[in-house]
Length: 424
Image (cartoon, rainbow, N blue to C red):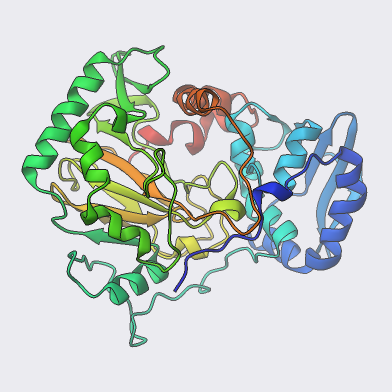
């Protein structure tokens, strides 16, 4: 089996000009996918969208069931203004509608922010030929064709073919008792020390505020560099075997190994602002789904997680659904579940699986995230970006909610801004 669904190579990305996109790329995409894209707009009940780019506007609207384009805009449309470079990145799936907002590259001057986010799966339908998800399109079945038991968990000695099938169907796994309580206690102590030494401007942590306005560190970036115990566990065969589970020979890693580094998270009580309890999202939610999905994200339960301490929420099968990558799409008809874990358990999810961090209500918890990624496609090469820039970009996300709010429209009141503090 394979969870590789990539359709683009990094090396094929290019800088497209506004008129090239408006006059050539979009008409070409419409000639191939106007029908399925129009169906997606109608299914999601989206308004027409006008893209205003450096003094020129193009309107996307549905007529007789198919998506069409026309010069200019119409009063009552949702209107997004963005630069030519941002438009180029959007049509090539380098960034999503949310990714542009998170980096202050788009502003809604008419209509709601939720409408802009809602157009994301339509863009993927238009440019990639992926139908927008409709109710009933996804069935979750076991190896015998019956209903998949979504409450099932696995142990390391279970049949890998069953685990691979479950992962392919549901987009996640819950693995029990992988690491010992003693190992997790050592990691927890290292995480406590790292949180204590973190500073708001250190470029290596994310911060969040409680109801009294007190800011506290909630995520330690590059945590693998701060914990010798964690470094050993990341290389341990009890975790490394997951890189070969799907047959994709997943790889990557900051030191040439099979893992991608790690971040340490604490989930305190009473968080009211900031990126601690993340709302529904996909790991490709900022962009590049067609360049790297699916990789695997792995959560190491340093402490257990349950209803009172903020268990991980998952929408099973959502990695197979073309839905918006930020927020829970109303068209997604699959019920969400919570993964209750014990200390030393692992949660595994595909990078295109919709998930969220539920807020703890009685007890805080700790978790470490790491993962594996797909090897490069033949002939591909990732653009060179300095390690310093990569670290700075990651650290900059700590105040991303302010930039999302700056996108305008209804953003200030939307789940995309304050989703971390909405009731579960």
